[in-house]
Image (cartoon, rainbow, N blue to C red; front, side, top):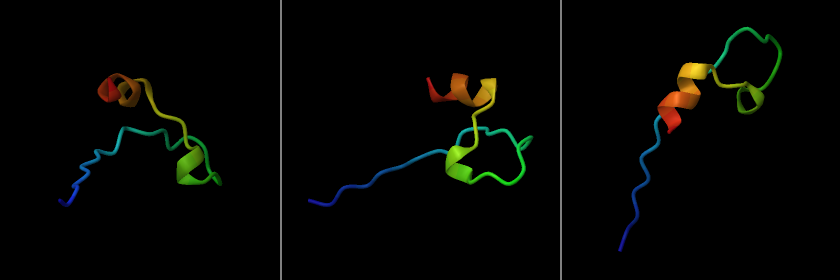
Length: 35
């Protein structure tokens, strides 16, 4: 059987230049959307 993962990108903060996307913090909206 195959497995399909569906992931939605959360709202992240663009206030920090020069950091990797994986290290970019979530905005409050992104945190709320994740739960």
